[in-house]
Length: 446
Image (cartoon, rainbow, N blue to C red; front, side, top):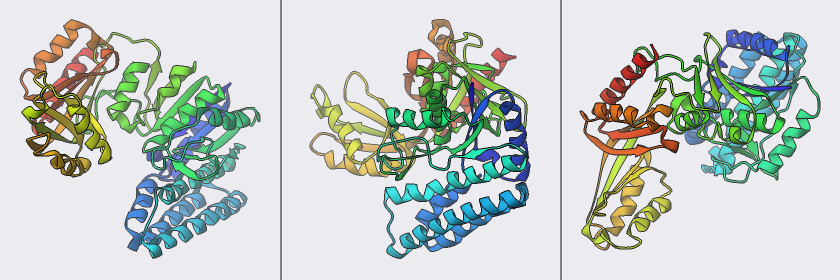
């Protein structure tokens, strides 16, 4: 049987992490064939993004990334393996320097070039982790070229399932005991590197699990599973023992634990388990098929960086296509609508977007003033979401609404199969609401 193990970037920061990773991989390799999916070393993706955006410092940043990998390699690999891995990483670093120098000279970067530069983090990590495993006596085979085949939507590439399945089946049928491959990145049919979006390594791992026929996928990170809330913000936050697939999808979509929104999508078409576990502390969250009604609410997720854009006009009332025109402006501005609210009177439309894209959409909407809309206003807000199968039961939902009744809620919406509810409020009230809802969850799980 095959097990897929994903190593997150948050646990790839020093030689102690790599020692713990080697021990964990050794334990799992005793029972199964393993495919290890790796992220870039901690902060490397952010540093490469900075190299793309801050071109005056791009060469310095790229050299620092290279030095980081070489330092780690020197501490975790024995001499012969160090030499081979050093040559491979140095070759990649030369490519990376050439492309960043070119970008600096012409002072322009395309989405394709951006993805190419970002791909070096995961590819270097593949070499680093493979060398660490070999030096510990584990015969790992590096698969540096990404297994995921995508279209050419650089930055948020879409997977081509049939071609991806062919690539993964090639390595799963090779009968190699231990394979290491990069997450987060894919490649087009022409061999150009793409990225799957932030958190894409989790999605890569579940895709590899699906197409390799794996019995389970283990996502290893710095915290022991998915927690009831961010432990840095919520007192008493604890690990959730198990989540249904629908609950996990909702939490991922709402930004819990920075999971890629599509992480659990492959589970709908595969008979495999996903276990999210910590490297440092005991504890894990198992993703299961069926909803467990106890506790009725499993977790709280918060989206802080949101803005509300309010469009008002009596000209929209009863006018077919008015709402479509508003949405069309969002599409033209390339702004994702996180949430939408409109009263039955049709006099107002509330659009909730990421704060960084607010100005683009406001500017577009103001072009409709005088013809379709009267005014456009905006302000900062936040979303507070509660997730749990129990929310589909009226008595549980009423209890939540009773708590929310003490707050000024701008919008309320239900999620997939009514297992989540999202409230949008002013920022200050949002924090208090989230804390109060989390306290209820802690009491239910005690």
